Length: 313
Image: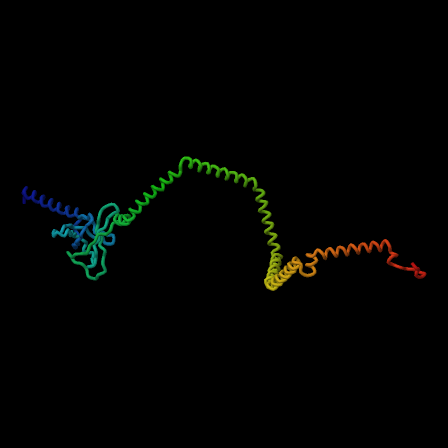
């Protein structure tokens, strides 16, 4: 049977239209050869979500966003329809989270699986929300700091201005001179340390010898320290209070005696303070000296001695 030209054209047209529909649905992300369930979510804001955006479950793409419509009731809410592979059982308390596909751009829906034993059915409605993006979190974190950063910049500018006013060219020159002097002093100290290195090493050797001597005589040192400790204990245990009291009493008595002598009391006081006693004593000594001198010059006048009897004078 001969096919007419018109039938051929019609067949080609039908095939072309069918292929176009399949290609269109494929480009929209609709699974062509996989059975799917449709779920609906109502959002107040879809954050740039578009049709054909992926729908993931635990990181695996289980479907796509099939349709996005504005609910025309004046509420401004948006109805999003998802096409999900029927092999995935979705609990009733599952939540559909809109989040970023990458850090830079692109949005997707992640199904946060619930714990309910009841599963969703085709054309059921899920609860949805928009996740806070990293940029929004950074913005929320940095916004309170904006005022503090501004104040810090102003204060830093004031500090820099103050430093500029302090560090004048003259002061900068003085600082450079000071640094140069410190460098010269350091160099001089280095030279001194190199020149006196032998003496320093000798002092260290002497210190080692002294330390060894102390170590060798540690027993004698221990004995000496023990003796000192015993002497300290003996002094501490002695009745120093009574001794000091007696000493104070003796000093008080001596002070009383000295004061009495200075005031002419007693024999010693009269001897010290009375000039007549001194004069009489001095005269007596002078007369005694004259008597002794006369006895020496004229002994016969005072001593009579004869072997043959007394002569008449």
